[in-house]
Length: 361
Ligand SMILES: Cc1cc2nc3c(=O)[nH]c(=O)nc-3n(C[C@H](O)[C@H](O)[C@H](O)COP(=O)(O)OP(=O)(O)OC[C@H]3O[C@@H](n4cnc5c(N)ncnc54)[C@H](O)[C@@H]3O)c2cc1C
Image 1 (cartoon, protein in one colour):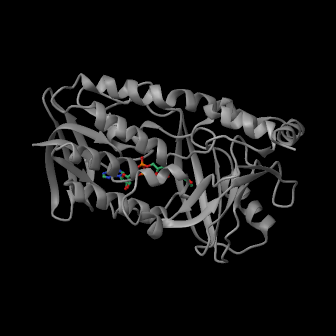
Image 2 (image 1 turned 30 degrees about the horizontal axis):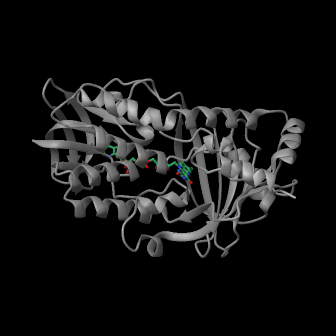
Image 3 (image 1 turned 180 degrees about the vertical axis):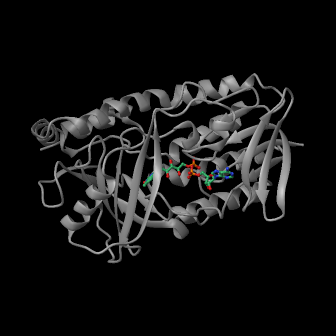
C-alpha cells in the first residue's frame, strides 16, 4: 500500500508528489495522458515560478519577460492604459516543458510517476483509499493511505468523493501566430462579458491570443473579433476550463484536492499555476498519511494563505463588468507605475505600491 496516490500530474500534482517523496513517503502519481499535453494554458507567471523549479529550468523553459500590461476597454485599436513595474513583473514560459520538468523532479525525488493511467473510480474506506485506473495493461487497482486529487478543473476525484463544485467554470481559448515578438508588455482587452481577452508576446515562440468568459457567452465570436482586430492569421487553436471560486470543502476523511480541482486560482486572471503549487506545499507540510485529522490543517493552511488574495481578486474582477465610461475613468486614474505583485492583490496596500504611486510624475 502506498502512503499517497496522486491523481493528475500537472504542476500541483507533480509538486505534491515531489515534496511528499522528499519527506520519505511512498508516492504513486497517475497521469491519464502524457505529462503536459494537451496544452491549454498561457504559461504567464510571476517570477516566483523559479522558486519551484530545479537546475537549468530557466534556460529550458523561459520565453519572454514582461514588465506590465496595457489595458483596453475595447479592441486592438482602442486607447491603451499601461500598468507597469520598473523591474520584471512576470515571465512567459513553455507550459508543456514546465509540466515535464516538474514531473521529472518528482521522479528524481522517488515518486513513481506513471503516464497513460486514467483513474476511473475512487473508493474511500475507513483506513485506506482504493483507486481503479485504466492503463496500457488494462484495469489496475491501487491502494493508499491517502489520495491527492490533482486532476484539474473537471476533477473526477472531486465527483467520486461527492465534494462540492467550484462556483464557476470559465471557458478559455487560445491560438498562436508565428512572428517573433520580444516586446515586454501584454495587452488585455475588457471586451468579453465579465472577463477579458489577451495578447501575449512569447519571444521566438510567436504571439499568443486568448480569451476567457463564462458559459453562455459566445466565446468563439468574441475571439474571432479579437483576431480580426489584430489582422493576423492564427493556428494551433486550443481550449480549456478555468475554475473560479473554491468550494467550501476540499478534503474528506482520506482525500484532498489541490490545484484547479480545488479552484485554487486567481479570480481576476484565472491563473492557477502558482496558487496550485503553493497549496501543494501546504499539503505536503501539513498532511500525515497516518493521521487523517491533519487534513483539517491543510484546509486551514491554504485558505489562511490565499483566501484574502482570492477575495480581493473577486473585487478586482467586478471592475471588468463596470460600464465602459466608468472603466475608462478608472483606468485613466490608476494607470502608470505600480508596485503590486501579480499573485498577491493584497500588495495593493503595500509600502512598495505606495512608493510606486508617490514616485509618479
Ligand atoms: C486558456 C487558459 C489559459 C491559462 N493561462 C494561465 C497562465 O497564463 N498562468 C497561470 O498561472 N495559469 C493559467 N491557466 C490556469 C492553469 O492552466 C491551471 O491553473 C493549472 O493548469 C492547474 O493545474 P492542475 O494540475 O490543477 O490542472 P491541469 O493542468 O488541468 O492538470 C490536471 C492533470 O490531471 C490529469 N487528469 C485529469 N483527469 C485524470 C484522471 N481521471 N486520471 C489521471 N489523470 C487525470 C490531466 O491529464 C492533467 O495532466 C490557464 C488556463 C486556461 C484554460
